[in-house]
Image: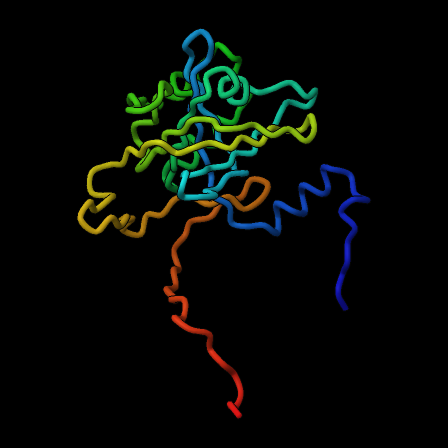
Length: 211
């Protein structure tokens, strides 16, 4: 027997709990931005993905405070139009989660947690120096459907990667088994280890006997 649930009839918190538990795994955007006073903000977001190649689009779901006011990342992107998505591997998971704590707007999570920064090339916000790859982005549009969050559509304009990660002859990314961390639900994260390769058929596969 199949369970059928009416999401519209549920409280938003329960809806969120169920949806984030079934839409897994999700990549994590560890976002760096710059505040009005120059403070570098760093915070992780798992409502994130890549959505296009021409232009190269990324989408972030930026949750607001309970009273509907914008968090630092949202406010900084609104003001500057720039942000950096840092991609973390499992060895950085503790530091990444720690940056989600409620620091004051004038306190840099990077400074508080001893995270090294490095300058970006195409945007003002710096990247986190120890991540394997960072994507520099500019905001294209912000969508607001409720007081709960903003949906930011950004354009990826640059990539910084550690030496050896990207082969510039084949343009392949060599993770060497140390893939980015994946968000599951609640306080659970996953390490990607069992990888299966399966190519898309060049033509449809017909089942049954042709007549």
